[in-house]
Length: 533
View (tube, rainbow, N blue to C red):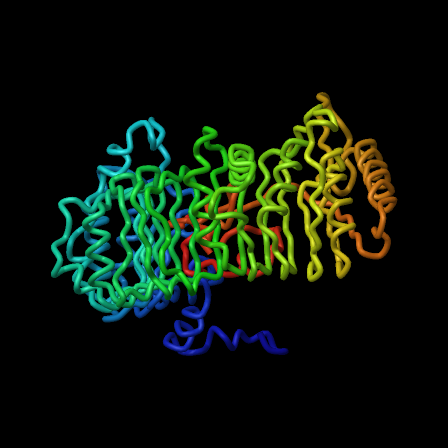
């Protein structure tokens, strides 16, 4: 309004106001209906020629499945355009509305959609995925018209099925596809091979909880794949990759590969993680060769399982097998995901450092477990620190640091071996109150007594760390929540589980996905296009 109280914005023509509303998020634009009767129907303009249709979490809100479907249908009827860039939908798994979803797919294809994501929510499923995965993927069959959409660049599907599978001619129509993400979809080895041979521009492939295929053979010279992410695809035993264009390889879950990576000279980023998986001692035959195949990368993420199996491999072959040590000559960034931390696992870190020297390492990130499980091993059972030097290591960051004996020994070791260290950041997890009853909370939401104890714990911890050699000036101790959130807003134990269809997803990430880590280049590589549903 101007100085005289006139609402000059409302006096603008409908077309101009509609153009302004089209620049706002759909939810915010719709809320302008409460301003006045003048604005009651203006929000409809944003749907008439919208090129970005997002029906994911923010749109769904607290709607019932029936309301959600009716509103999507309502808004699509308002659309008058002939072209859309993105169509994202995360819908309830309700058999009553499968015909509506088919019409949504037809709507997007008819308007030459370039980015299409379709996910069915897992809410309401009575079984876990691994108990009855046929039920999980058996609800909605993806219409084959989707594979006739030549302009399609990005395709993401979750909790649906492809069978009966599209023929090779239809897959050939996706020749401009650049990013394919499949989560709990019944894709087979034959379909994957067709994708590799026909989708010559495919750069990123993400497969999560896909258990209907047993092999991946990526050997065609024409393939331009740059990122491959495999999350909990536990039936793969035959993996053969010869792709010089591949830059990022993430694998999470059980690893039973019969074959490994061949020509991956362009690989710079590797993620190998089996957190929460049961592993036997002989599994090092799968992990150690894989680690050797990616030894030339610049960014490497591994977990406790990999460290433990490298240690087992060394114990079973004390004189080193024929392949010998595994030097990581190009490694600039190392990330350790520790779901356990004790003296035993500290020894595993020592073994890894000794067996896999990293002369150019610049950044080290360690995610310690939220609940420390320090063992009572005697000093005689703990391996001695290796005679290693990290002459280029400048940054170390540890999350969930609590100052246990194994953590303190690790910090001491790193301080002693890193002459060029500029910053050591320890993110300490504050202790939480476990008492019951009613407690008066302070302005920050914590009881005053608990806040005092936490501050005392931090002072004690800071004093213990600063007493270590070379700690003064390099160490920063900050307080953190200890909870890592992925982009979908759920707790995640590793980045790959944060990929939505997905880095990302995770990780991957995938590469989107973990908030609060500040872990360098990997976490910024996630697909910003993943819908958060």
